[in-house]
Image: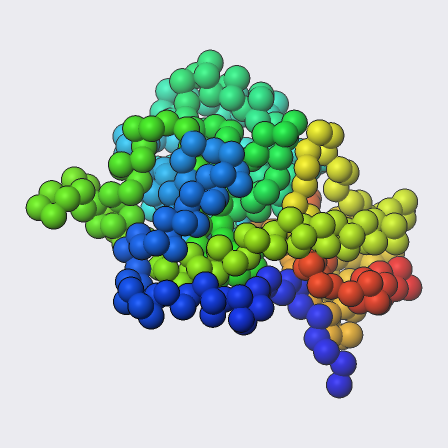
Length: 368
Ligand SMILES: *Cc1c(COP(=O)(O)O)cnc(C)c1O
């Protein structure tokens, strides 16, 4: 039987390389709690992202929850965000006792529509949590101007944007803080993992305390913290994967170019344009079927029959899911562009080692 083509495939170093990296853990018997691998990965990430601080977490979701918590907003504060994202973004806001206020996305790159932010600001608004969807960067300049004018914090969900640069500046440097996910399915992985990046020195201690039960010293517990520490084995995976990241992104770029060659200029098929002055990471390949001879759901089925798994990402919207059904700010009709897109978008299989034949097979099915 032909092999199944999944929507993604985790990057891994060779087994030998990983074993070499974890060998000294058998000597130290130090498996977690900010050991040498953790320290090494942290400083390598700060260097790679050219950012003053990176704090590592056991996953991206808790990194985002902690980044928001570290800002110490008044409970009930409103946070402007988008529903065209993974549920984690909205959950992180709500689990901090804050209220998500959903702003629509723009039709070009599906990030927050900056022309619609200001009309949502009230005297309760405390922050903006925009998402760099598919690795497409938000309009960071305009967002910062709005935030400065209204005295709001900006925390980016940059889960998709590891390695992305705008005019030579790494995505880790925008807003008050950014969260990256290093989940197995992301461009760069530590199996499960994540980080918060930022410039403000005063956040270092809070974020470090919070991920370790709020423990500041042996007899000092400064916060009601949780446990979100990255283990040595996760960090070792990250150290290995980081060595190969640039090559992986280069390979993803070839896959994206191949898709583009086959699918651009087709009536009813919309691809994301390349953003000017952005060095992309080719994390996903989203395609919007809008007025095409087949619907998104038909294409999804047709691919599925040939053992190819695409993903309706993001569908449903987070302002349209049952756990927020009774929420006063919910309702996908309030964000029509996000709704239109969520009903028509499919992300196609995308990973560094996706073969050229596989891309052709996928495109043949779509175009037949
Ligand atoms: C993956 C992801 C997260 C959560 O990260 P985890 O590491 O899986 O916890 C949050 N937001 C977005 C947009 C994501 O894609």
